[in-house]
Image (tube, rainbow, N blue to C red; front, side):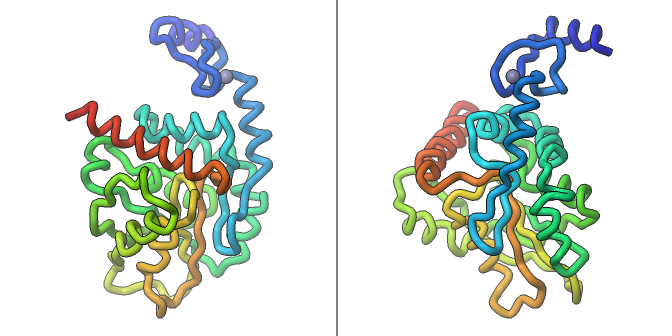
Length: 242
Ligand SMILES: [Zn+2]
């Protein structure tokens, strides 16, 4: 197997997504040093508010991995990262999730059609599927995106929240389950504006408890810069494909 991998790395030029070095021992995306670093990062899940859990902190390595998930067409990274999060099963997030009323319904933040067409997948949906597999829950597409949210790069935090508020509407089945808990899933928790808008879309009289789980938590001091960089990358991708 190692021989095949070495040959494949040589032929296809596979590199570690973390450090860019070629290695005969990618697992399949990280070299041993970056894989070990990811394990260390997974020991620091974040809880930005009482309703939100984030599996990894935003660090150079995790930032590169979520970027690869979104822009390098590597959908398999979603389950890879969830499976490597020590927080999911027996960690703090696992304990929090198990304390909620079961079963768990993982609701991905919907992607706009145009972006879905560009990317071919919704990373939040892949993360929701991986979380559902890890915890025995279900993926439910109970939200739809209503308006195309324009580039928010130049907007202030308040303006961004206004812009994204109302972007989501319910897409509930005819018969909603009477018990269980809803977990809204996204890739990155920045200001929390997106997930708050999703929670608002469920309505004030929604009967089940609502929580949020994201892959990364971006600390407020760096969130604005990351958000801007993220939007720029998003729009660069869209522009380059026109
Ligand atoms: Zn590496």
